[in-house]
Length: 580
Ligand code: FES
Image 1 (cartoon, rainbow, N blue to C red):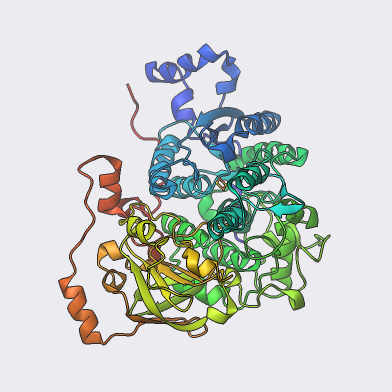
Image 2: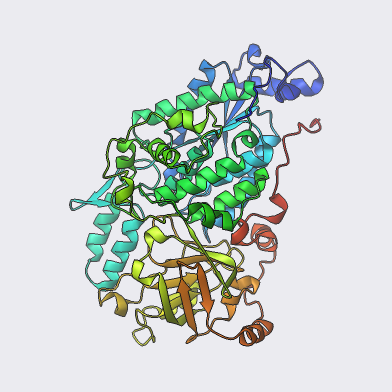
């Protein structure tokens, strides 16, 4: 840790808008007074933008306006000037074709919202899956002092005495309906029991994973990730976050001081330990690209290889975020990583302390939720990065959610050209498929869907499900919900729509998966593969205009984070020209 706080007092960027008596200044400041702000609030104190992803259409963030009030209280207490700013909110469960297509649009809009306005420091008020990475990407590109506070997970769901995990049980229940072991009425009852309080998904899905990533990166106060949305301590966390950002502005503690290579390495190992979502791979690569850290897919494989998954949460394990909080939450996991030599202890956090100083004395209150090493869910919990002629740039698999007996397998490909082809064929009893086959889904990557939908964990055919089989190897260029499970190979790069080898797999080809040796192989000759690729022609249509056009023109591959090519990098926070 080499951070040295800046001297205080000094002029902040907001003084370029609010200080003095020029015509321009009066324009910026005078109109603000229509909200009843006294003149002395424009005296050079830190102006804190509370970037709020609240929306009635983002149910996981539906409670964030209340939380914003607590953030404001903290900012006032510390001598700052809080201003709440609504920002683009990409809801996972509402946006079509997929929220992922809008992550980059949100990051672009929020970056300009931060840079174009008199914001000295930002509180990133986030929750649902894409809201956390999009705001972190914006913060990284502006390098304005920023701190994350998440909305927190929902309380446990219960259906007929059994814990119901967001998403995880949705897949289970929908397969049970398909297999005829659950009625439609039971399904509706279960659905209602799944989401019974404010908050984000209560499993270790993408929202909980990204909250954990923010904390492991050092971008949130210690303990933030697991506090349930409705727990009073979530509101305390919001207030403390408001207090803290004011001091961060005074010290000039910026995202680039915190999100270093060491911080990303800590986050990758944390992801293995918590059994986190594969979506974290894409988001961390994109955030690193914004802040100028040269992170690669190979880093994921190298750093995660020997990390044991010790958090016993769905989808890999048994419990939910509520129990994780009661057990001590992420600080306990970070302490374990530190004791095992798997944490850069001197990585700086938003608190101004190192990550080790934050966690070294925490206690595990439940060893069935945060497991001792000898009872780890898997000793190789990190994301496995597979390569081979089918995925020259890589593909990912989450071992903690996969089936051990399928980790080395050779099977016949059953190909679906796109998601519509899959939907048209999967329930057909004459489909030539059994549990030894490898299901291959094309054209669901960043360009292909477009937006890389979470369809990689495609459901099994009913005739296989009826045999009691619950897992088969599935390969695609899609993503998978962090709440999902199975031997599912994702993010295959280059994607089919960009002419990757996935595009030329045919029904009946043999595919070999060898996870221990990180190999994914299409068993045809090099000559045959080259001939097929030479004949390949794009099948997807380019939208004629609008954001979808921009996205498809500029989106990069999943192997580098699926950001837009022209958004990579940090553009800083120059105050720019005056507006009048
Ligand atoms: Fe919003 Fe899971 S759908 S957090």
